[in-house]
Length: 446
Image 1 (tube, rainbow, N blue to C red):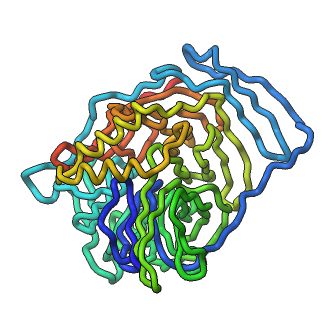
Image 2: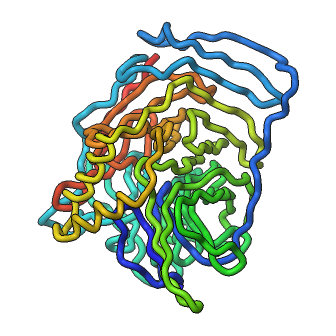
Image 3: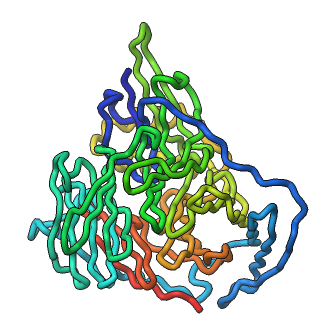
């Protein structure tokens, strides 16, 4: 069996068993193997035990009302709207305070396929660079301090590498999805130990952050193959499970399944030999998830609703915002297609790309949001779904209790890595594809 996968337009068909490259959170991943399904716990329709109306603090937020109530032990927080940009006293500088990277210069500063990053307690910065299969450490001022790792399968070596975060004492938790393992590094000692994921954790390794004990949450990928239904042509949206694994690689918690990515499947062939291609549809919904501290946030993007779970899998909180979904217009579709055509390395493929888009269905409404992140203080950052041609990436910030605080933006060519108490860390890619690590100063509102 052969398949291809990816964002429209279609990419060349790949042998199914051989694909193991790391997949960013929220991306479509097709992997073979058995698939287990579970369902998320539902809310009991019991009498509301408590009801309170609270206002959101901060300037120009008085018009937003937030209702908090309890339902069978689950806190439900409903807000009438989300703040406009810049409200609440929050400020995210638009010019970076620190940039690391080079186009032509010392190779120690050349970055390629940066997949994760974190800032240690003393201000040092550690990133995972898949171009060199290394963890690289820089000083608070951006000077190169050292690196660990190389390509390989031995202890401290990587086939793919992603910094997931830090534990107490600045111990780094590092994921290698290809080798199915998790490793610990200490800045002063280097490699410490590793654990290999068991089969019950699953076959797809789309990471969605980690809890404070170091257990990593996986989910959002798509699996089919032996033991699962054969894919059929047309629009597909199977459920996708989420689960966590500890530092030894063992399954810890199953959080259930939510609707996965909307994609369009094409098959051809017969007699036991067939080809499969799959593309995420324009403006299609994708699951969003992120874990940090003692909370995992999950959402399907069908509506502005976000579920919060504790590390044991208990649903503790539901956030809702009464914001109407944005309709998809024909102009949005045309702009999206032209953006895809403009980005082609081979202009002769333009008719193929337009034809591919023309075969796929288009939703009536855009997703409610694009993704999640949680900062060091426990605030949830919800990324707004961008309109075609948008030059900004915007996030609505909620406090740990679920009340909206502000909406902040950065240029769209920044990919978010980490949010600390007073900084936002991103990867910026220039028009030539050169990557740079950027640190932006963040001022929190009162």
